[in-house]
Amino acid sequence: MPRPRRDGQPARPVRKQVLTELTITKCKSEEEHFLVWDAKQHGLALSVQPTGHKAFKVVYSFHGRPRWYDLGKASGIGLANARKLARDIQYRVAQGHDPQAERTAERRAGTFEELAERYCTEWSSKRNKSWKQGAGLVERYCLPRWAKLKPGDITRADVRALLATVEAPVLQNQILASASAVFSWAVKQEIIAANPCAKVDRNKVTSRERVLSDSELPRFWAEFNKAGLMGTALKLILLTGQRPGEITHMRREHVIDGWWEQPGAPDVKVGWPGTKNAQSHRCWLAAPVRKLIALDGDGFVLARPRRRPIEALDGVMRSICAALGIGVKATPHDLRRSFCSRVTGLGFGKDAMNRVTNHKEGGISSVYDRHGYGEENKRVMETVAAHILALAEGKEHGKVHVLGARKQR
Image (cartoon, rainbow, N blue to C red; front, side, top):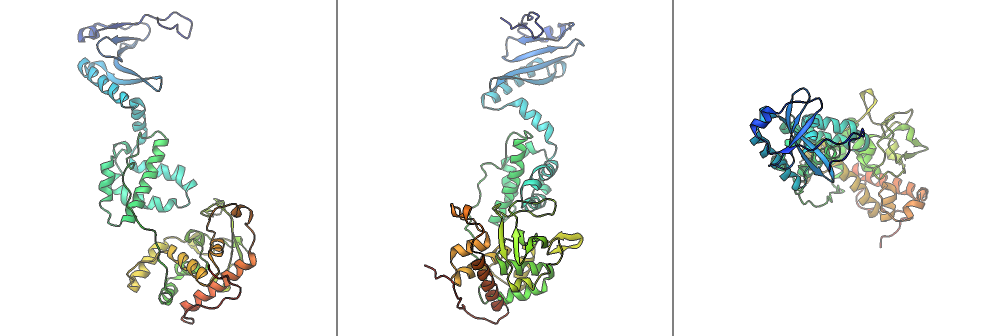
């Protein structure tokens, strides 16, 4: 028996019959909207408005709730096509799809170019510290092929075809991750129904172990001297072991009595991205480091015109490697790794290396032991920086004896 209407009036009787083109044509409008259900095709109904407008509707249940799908004007579709479309929709529902939600998402999607812009503006630029790198990969590799396509029309085959145009396995993985982030956000926003990057295999790559040798340091240092402000940034990474993104955003007001106080949380107002592990960190700036930079005033230590932080260190390192004819390319992060290898190589040990580079190992000690070892960390930074500088300037060959350094077990 039909349920009563919300206004308390008794429910109107359900109208159900085998629809024909003739009955549809003769069906007259009434003062209120009504439906005529097709007895031949489950879920198909003819909707008749008081204005006389007639349209086919498909009703299905998704997660226990009724969903209405508008097929369109009855005279334009025809009964036979309406029944076929209704069967297709019911079949998709049986496979776990929600056709009405997918249609709504597709209408809201716009083009992939618009989606990528929304993703950067509304999400990644506010939450992802390395959002510019991902945005750059999408702009360079995805937009030339997908810019004017609807996101919902991009398939897994399209993703694989795009990756096939890139030779480097690591770069393929980076492009895939950047594109997948855009699509994943779009799924959460109900802009598209599925992420086409899902189930696309990533390339297996080995972790980098590149460390500048003692003989390479003078060659790279000489090129750093030619690279101006960018070269200074690369020197700072090598002499301090801090992350490239933190070096490029170093601010003068964060340096207090020789200690670079790095807030763990980002500060959008001043352009500080926060540390990678979100833990505040104190880094002693050794004498060779302080000679490279001016710390008076405020703002970014390494600033471009208009007081903006420098960027694109990877490109500078690639150019330097090409100029030197280096077979195994080095990256800015490899300079941090080179610093870390000197810390342990000089006998200070892995714990000291993790402390001075803000590398999170985990464990309860990382919670309660944040401000200790100040003097020891200072000695580590001074010794390692002096050692690297001596090697870079050709004044030292081999290891030095470090007073107070711990022997490695």
